[in-house]
Length: 337
Ligand code: NAD
Ligand code: TYD
Image (cartoon, rainbow, N blue to C red; front, side, top):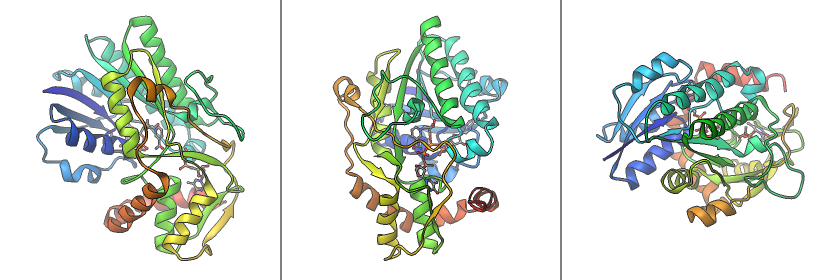
């Protein structure tokens, strides 16, 4: 049995990754470390909580002593780091937690891994570190890093630390950079689940600016398969881009959700734009296709339908998330737009 540590496994992508590994890699056992912030939810792993190949420990990677203690008696061959503060709008409201978790937390993981032998660290990063595109072109792994939000700046900082540890200490590290994910268990602060939940609840659908901004959407399962093959077959020190080959304007996504869930577009509202709003992201994932034999499997329209079906079937999951913290956040962000 191979033991791996998944950090941030109670969040959206981490939980989907754990489901995938338990399903498809019977020889891997997982220790899941997560601080259970507002975005971390044990309900995301409820169906696998009694699996003997999965253990959980609540720990904050910003707390170095606590992290060292959680790992001191553990033997493992890899760390996959999903843990992060992940929402751009929250990073604009207050960047401190982003600096602490995304930069300092990653540096703690790097130091712990460096002091042991034979451990690979896979850092889950984002296309947002590359900055914003105009109407043409796509990010490659050679595109210079030029982050625009406090969130993407903190993720870029973490990437640079990972690369420095590989260069300086020979640490076995791989970085993956992926475009916007959608799918089950996504916290309803992000575009797609927020619009699904608001549409189901008869609430306004707030579109920032013109709605013309473009994202490259990937189903979370395709991203998780990419992380897994990069962990297993990626070359040390390399960066791998993943994308969904599905560029869409925000307004077109909101319309698709409204059409299906409301039958009309009456709830759509154009609201004040996000400060510093990146215009467009698009990923060139030729390197992952060639070196890792990876390609996205989901077509966007089918994946979006399946995601809407999941939220309709799992209303208890998202109703439980709409707590006071969420209501306060929503009022703070959207109240003044
Ligand atoms: P998420 O916000 O849903 O989950 C983050 C998880 O990290 C939560 O379980 C949270 O409790 C945990 N966490 C936060 N701070 C922590 C800390 N100090 N110590 C331990 N655990 C902590 O995020 P997600 O959407 O699942 O994203 C996972 C990773 O993928 C992030 O690194 C993110 O930057 C990256 N990413 C996300 C997307 C996307 O579209 N969501 C795209 C590309 C890359
Ligand atoms: P988001 O899901 O926050 O991801 P990111 O900003 O990391 O790409 O937002 C996706 C796009 O949707 C982005 O262009 C901002 C826009 N958006 C809205 O128009 N309204 C909203 O309420 C949200 C949350 C996002």
